[in-house]
Image (cartoon, rainbow, N blue to C red; front, side, top):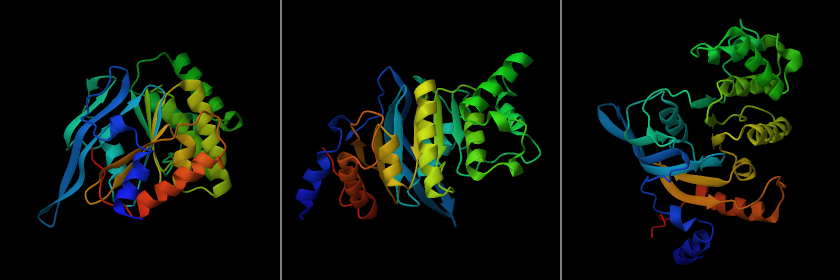
Length: 281
């Protein structure tokens, strides 16, 4: 297949309005990333991790981020959540530029990061410590979100008494209890076995449907990205930058073996494993 044929094939799945995104988000965008770049010094030489990354996430939208290891996916999430403030460009939440921690943004890591000396309720409640809420309201919220992730019977259990999937659900409850507008997820199911991973993907969609939260999920799993997301952003590496934006274009609930998902998966594999010259308009 010639390069021109490859470009034509891939252009069919790209949203034309997003091939060149200057970072000017629509007024309704929950999250706007405008020309974000990130570098650090390695042995006295600058190393560019992200270059000119621009995209938006609408309210209630799920956006997946795919790419080979080292393309800056996790770094991008750290910038959005405010764990790293040394970057160029603009990050805005609900139209307001933000730099640093923001109560409207929460994150779920690949490792659940529960404190072993606290119960499920105690771990979930940590996210409410900075909020000025009456004690009863805090307790009600903790109970609500523990119920939401299906851990009602384990609210007083300690992390060592939970399975891996249960611990990750507790971490999701902790992220949601502060009721953020944006939920960032960094390989949230990567450490789980395949069957449990499928179950928690459906659990996440159930929670998303009830809370209408915007989600950005970083994953190495192409099928997971296509099953969960409205759009999938494909990053290329060295430095990390957007190569393609794929509109999944399927209503929910979805079938994992839907022919459209199978077709998109094949194209995503080509993009991730052997990215050609970037498509420009």
